[in-house]
Image (cartoon, rainbow, N blue to C red; front, side):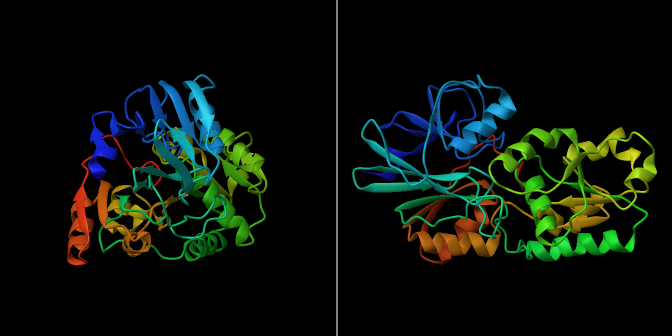
Length: 335
């Protein structure tokens, strides 16, 4: 069968007619298969949701226990039949619970990656390349300029700054799901054993990570009870949105940091008044995108939510058929 008969874009999202389901739909549907818990991929209101147990748990934390009519957990690597379609979930290495979704029918296999990265990350299962006929890849950082440095080097820069300015606090902006917990674990792996102070928006998700066996060390609420001096030398982690409001002004002469792949672009850091940009991304960079495409052995590549044109052009130069999907509604919450 033609690949486009197995999966194709609709306003709601990627739709599989023979299986009668959507992957990461942006509108409420009867049956949704969800790759991971970021809000641009995982929305509430579906009649039924199939996802990994960790993604279901994360959706319940973010949206409430009644986020869907019914839910079903998909164990990684296990094949599930939906009508005559075989689907299976495989680690994507993006955030805790994230998965690629393999869709197979009448001898054709399409793998939808969702979001993914290839750097080692102690807070989630590593990406597993899946051989397929068609690979649907994200392209958030799908330009050759984006080559992420080792995250350990970026954390070393943060710790060096904290040692150089013991009288100042360091405020690290990091997305609430995935990035924040990864930064915390990187700090612990680098030997930082002092308490980390976190914004309230990170508390429940960080507690969940801890419950899944991911040691983030001692976490304290970033609330000022005594005075600003209480946070001299402290590392404070919070969502990027928190650093634009009054909450950030309670800390002593804070150094603004932001952990994001976009920090590769100096103008972005300058516009955000980021003093210490940390290039730490939960998405694959250019080299990882192109290497992954080759590893899948796919004869056709569909490119979505990102810099689609450059990656499509690279595929064409490599003799691989490719096209952009032009899906809408997907942002960069986990960049």
